[in-house]
Amino acid sequence: MNSGGDQVHIIVVRPAGSDTPDPVAILERLGPEARIDAVADAERCLSHCAAGGVDLVVVDERLGPDCDRLLEMLQPDGPPVVLLQRDAQEGRALRAFRKGAAECVAAGAAFAEVLPVVALEQIQRRRALRERGAAERRIRDLERDNRNIIQNLNSALLVVDSSGKIVFCNPLAEIILGESERDLRGRSLWDWFPGIPPEEIHVARALANGERSKGGESQVTRADGSVVPIGISCAPVSNGQGEEPGAVAVFSDLTEIKQLQRQVLQTEKMASIGQLAAGVAHEINNPMGFIHANLYQMGEYLSDLRGAWDSVEALQKAVARGEVQDIQDAAAQLAAASDEADIAFVLSDLGKAIRESQEGSERIRHIVHDLRDFSHRDSEEQVLADINQCLDSTANIVWPMMKHLVLLEKEYHDLPEIYCFPMQLKQVFMNLMVNAYQSIDECCGDTGKMGRVWLRTELRGKGVAIVVTDTGVGIAPENLSRIFDPFFTTKKVGAGTGLGLSTCFNIVERHGGSLRVESTPGAETSFTVLLPNRPPGTERRVG
Image 1 (cartoon, one colour):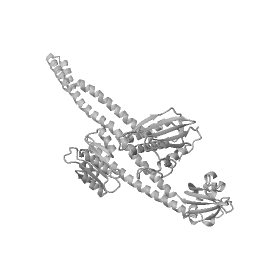
Image 2 (cartoon, rainbow, N blue to C red):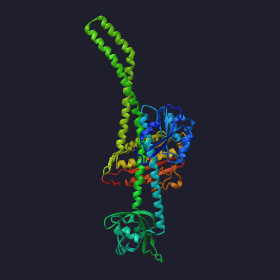
Image 3 (tube, rainbow, N blue to C red):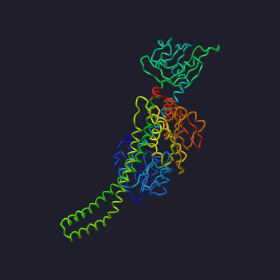
Image 4 (cartoon, helix red, strand yellow):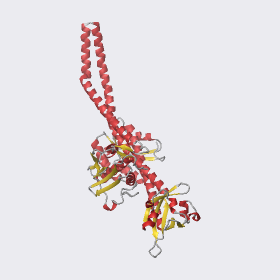
């Protein structure tokens, strides 16, 4: 077992007299790091959870009404709850999910194999959420400190004259620029911005048109070739006579924050992949279940047919001998064997089982194809891609996660293939769909209602438009202008880092397109991706 190296604590709630397989004995397979306490009622379970340190609760549905009470008391901040059911009835499972159950496991042939896997997956997911929350707090702390530093000028400080030559710097500026104050004085600041157009340099804009900027981002290149990302604020300097002979710039090194951004984004990606993988595994498990059952039944039918075939062989031998009585006896024996095995039914049901198994294997093949297509790496250059196919294959991957709560509608129009990085666009589509599902879950998760996600593509001008609409909680008007900012999020702590939409915005922008949002709180939210149809040779590199 590898759930983070620490001991895990699992509470099993199983009422006395339950006839399901013993989950305690099954979960003990997780190894010595797993501490498993069995209780017979909800009160003892809640007492354990109140003491802290519980990673997972496993509840037998035979607990009755107390199951709902447990789910209500433990959600949303308590440990995840796995519900053990008598059978795989979708209606009861759907109700349990809406009440807050993390997963449902039905008693059956695979129960002993499935339960430990589900338990370990839920424990790892809970710990990943905790770790991600700690990283998010670290980033928020760094951002707050960075703002305080800039406001108090306790950061790198440069003053340049009207031509951009450095006239003053502090020790932190020396460190960031990689030069001593003696070497910096009189040098042109533009030496640290090679290849960057003046209109993209904050200090140059301050000198050219008096523009003030706050909290911008750029990068400086040192003499040794190393690149340092910086957060910069600058303003023109006035001499008191209305003239602006220079500018002042306050900036700080963002290297650590950028590293943390990448770490948190990777953590968020892994959490999303884990959530998607659980849904895909469930999708594969369903057809595998009836294929396995059909194979078992076909094995029994084979035994019945073998018995009838023995009687056929006996009849053949009797015919070969030519003895009338032997032939009659063998024929009677064959008829009796055929009646006993009900050969007509066996042949009919065998054909049905084979057709069902073929359909199940074809379904699995499609799922695997979509996964392989989704995981394909982009090449170094943009390629022609079918945007409808990119959107649809991504929807197929996300669908298992959302299907218990979402009605998915698709309206794809004929589009030309466009030059792009398909996998990066699929990342955008996945993020928008997952956000749509989470928004619906927030407003409909406990109500029993279904939300709607609508995927639409169309030609628009000289490009293509991809629209993702949901009927979730919506976005407040005061937040619409901020949702693409890094680290801005309206989700609960642990549910999002605020990097997803920022990443989507950057990917689309670097494709030469745009990402827009319209929202009516409590009604609909639509994200529209607009992509240009660029001719070969004019593609933009997406980092």
